[in-house]
Every structure is written in structure tokens, then in C-alpha cells.
Image (cartoon, rainbow, N blue to C red; front, side):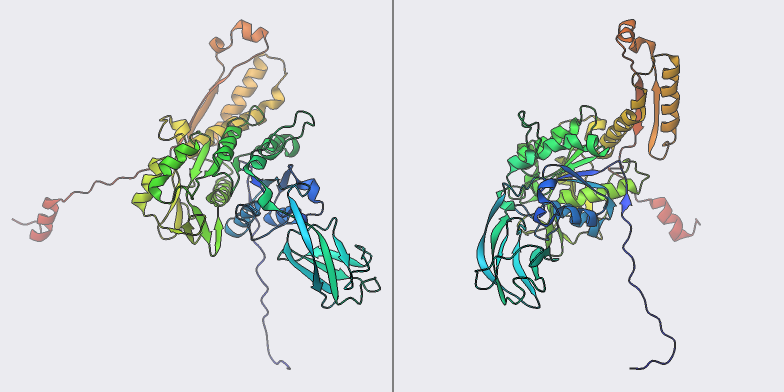
Length: 486
């Protein structure tokens, strides 16, 4: 059809650039469809740094089948791509194609336009046997056919013109496929093999800083952290990473046990989620038909809040919109809490979500509450500020280690640190101050090469409760009625 006139063609808006921050880098442990990876064996029990969700999907594969027993790392990929665009994220995949696999039964698949699709997830290209329709001629990869995965995670075999199977109407295929259901909580917790020195599961967290130069800020295992063994292990790791750093573990409560809000106290306590370095969460989040562990959504949310706050974790994520469509148990049963019920859950030291013109995260307490009353341990943002300050101090002054222990070194640390900390007051905290005291540094310590500084910091607590006392002013009423006359 011919055109006559002036016309406009609009281009699609470019994807939003992920917001980046280093104060709350997520380290996520779980399973991914690594059969889609270029080298599946190379992405097992090793920290994989992804500066975008697309990068993670390319490195580890992606599937929308992301519940427990499937591909749980994809929950964080989804949350950091479709709910909050944040980066970077470190992924630790424990699904090992050499161990967690099963047979792909021999079957025939029709060829259409030189392609055959195997409508099964998890097919391993390595070891695949492909034959022509009669099953008499074995085809060779990259000689007779190529193999690639489509957006559904299904393997597509494309016949090469002139190859042995070019005229085939059906292909007979057999081999192996990964089996995420074979992964157990033992794989997530991981272990250290003293014979080989190999670390697996949560033990790999130790490698994140030495390999990537990134201090973990948040530890999570969506789909798995509701298991007490996993949650407790993550909280323990969060309290002591590489012997010096600290993080926070985002832990989900088991919704097969905590089916209503009043169950959360017992389930939290029975699970042992009482560390100041953990943030217990309940229930799951829904986005349309997808059910996500709340830890996956909150991990993305916390990273986003921090990165939007000059990469400082002083703001609580509580009362922030989650960007989800509902709350539910893992089986999909709908959960609807009002503010009163949500606050009851908070009193147990558990964070939840309430619908206040949209679903909002609701809760400021760490797992240490209510057993502890120490402000630095019970408030999530305060605990994280202590973690952040300690982690930052270590990295900032590590270069000073082994310098001559003289007044130049003392003044350098004190002056530099006080200037650095002053830059964050009064916006990020009320203040901070460091000093070197002679009584903290006796001659015996000096001779032993040890120096001690004393630092005080004052992060703000969240405005947990805002109260307005209303009263009836009868004099004001009388004045209005009489117009101020007699």
C-alpha cells in the first residue's frame, strides 16, 4: 500500500540499566539449569559473578520452573531483572551434572524445516546420541547437526545441509538429563573435603572475596533456607566470612509449618533463626502465577534500596513496595495480612508483607528479637550499618598493615577515618568518631605489634512507631460556635 504524508515510527524503549551497588551484594546458593551453560562442569560449586540478570542467565541457564526441586537460582535472576533491576549478584550453583542426573529415554522426535525439538528440560548435550529415523546411522555433533537451547530450555537439533541426517523426517535421541530433584539440603549446606581441598555449597562463600574482590552483603538460598540446617548454616556464615567480614542471611520460614501468621513464632524458634545476623521472612511472594521465596524478592529490594541511598545500608527496606501481586504459602494458598496481624508477626522477630495501597515489606527486626534488646543487634538497618562500617574499615586500612607503628600511622588512620565518617553525618547516621587511646595500647601490645583503636558510631534506628495523641478541644469548639463572643 502506498503512503502519502508525514509518518512517525516509535522504537521500543531500551531496557533500564540495572542500578549497581557494593554494600549489599547478594550471594545466592541454589540450583540452575546448567545444561544450558557453555561448560556445565565449570559452573558447579564456584562463585559466578553476574553484573546483570541477562549475564547470569547466559552463564547458568534460565527456567521459569524455579521452585524447590527445580531451578531456585532463577528466582533471584527473575527478581533482579523483572522486579528490581540491581547488580551485581554472585551465584553459587550446586547442581552437578556428573551427580544430579538421570537417563533421557530413547525416543523419536519429528523433523520440521531441518529442526527437531526435544520438549524436555535439562537435556545434556554432552553424551547425547542422535540417529536418523531408522536408527542405523549415528549423527555427529557439528558435522551432521548443531545443538542449541530455545527460550523454553528445550534442546533444538538443527540438521546440517549435506550431513548424514539431512533428509531425515525423524530423529532418534537418547542420553542424559540433569535432575534438580536429586539435590538435597546437604548439597546446599556443602562441605570441605580435606583430601582434595574442594569446597561445596555454602562453604564456597569463603571464595567470593578472594576470587572476586567482593564482600558478601546478603546471603540467601531461595527455596532452601526454610530448612533449619540451611538457614542456621547461612546465619553462621554471615557472622564470620573470611575470618573478618560480616553479612546478613535472609531466611524464609517453612510455609508448610507456618500456615497462618500466629504460627510464625513457633516455626521461627523451632528453626533456630535467632541470630542477629539473620532476617527471618514469611510467607512467599506471588507475581502473577509465579511463586517466589520472599528471600529472593527481599534480596533484590534491599540491594535496590541501598544502591539508591549512595550505597549505604542506613535505610530500612520495611514499608517499601515489594512490586509483587500477592502473598501466599509455597503451595499457592493465598495469605492476606492487615497491619495489626503484620505487626504481630513483627513482634516475633519475623518480617512479612501487608497490603497498604500495594504490597509492602513489613518488619525491621533481625532474628535476635525479642530475645535480645541490644539496639545494634535487633534492628535490621542498624545491624547492617555495623556490618558495613566494619567491612569498610577493614578494606580501607588493610594497606596500612605492617607499616611502621608510629605516630604517623596513628594520625593517618584517625584523621582519615574521622573525615570519612563525618561525610555521612547527619544524613546516614547521627555521627561517628574514632580515637587512639594510650590505655588501650599497653607496652606489651606495642611490642607484640598490636595497635587498638576505639570507634563509636550512631546509626539511626527506624521510626518503628509514630504516635499522634488526639484530644477533643471543647474550648475550640465553643469558640467556633459562638464566634468568640459572650
